[in-house]
Length: 229
Ligand SMILES: *Cc1c(COP(=O)(O)O)cnc(C)c1O
Image (cartoon, rainbow, N blue to C red; front, top):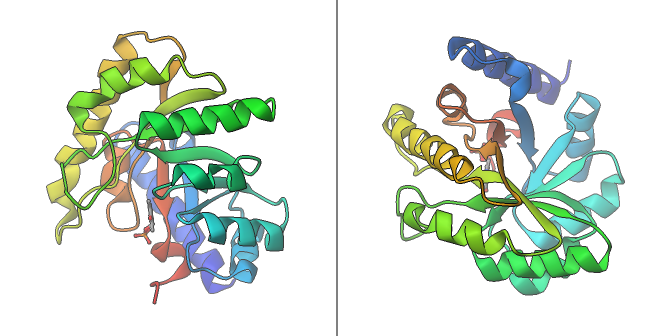
């Protein structure tokens, strides 16, 4: 077994255990392998080891790797996205995790409509209010969702957050809990075309806590591919 295969097995095992600890069905947690800076041959190795969903945070890298690896997995955009770059990835991306403005949602909707598609998006929330992070403030999310609900060409599937970096991941349990609470709250408003079935939260350092708090998508890079240089 290669290193990558072993790492994927271990991550899957930990996902399963975290889900069971929380009384959840492990099948309700999707693993997205984050492949920023990872070479295409290693992405293919991960795909051969069972990875179906891959996430990138830069448009150019995503496009290059998609062209090199072919149509072997679902591509997720997990990083901040500039409106003028949406056109390069609109025919590739299966889920946009990091929609952080209404204008970006409009651009994605417009481009998707032109292709006769519906793009699936998540709204990124800056739960901890960090200056360095993108995303809607928690108190803005409902209004933004109401605005986004009118945009054609997109379907909002849920929320996403990037937790602050801390030494002890237990410190960020509250951030994940808050995102879950927000998604339940928004779901209860029954806004047209706003679904809250996906909660994208948890990375290599904190995914087990995120799953315990309700994550349905975890985005894992370094635990699978090793430390980024
Ligand atoms: C890099 C990245 C990840 C994965 O981070 P790891 O700590 O390597 O697992 C997840 N989500 C986003 C948005 C990222 O940019």
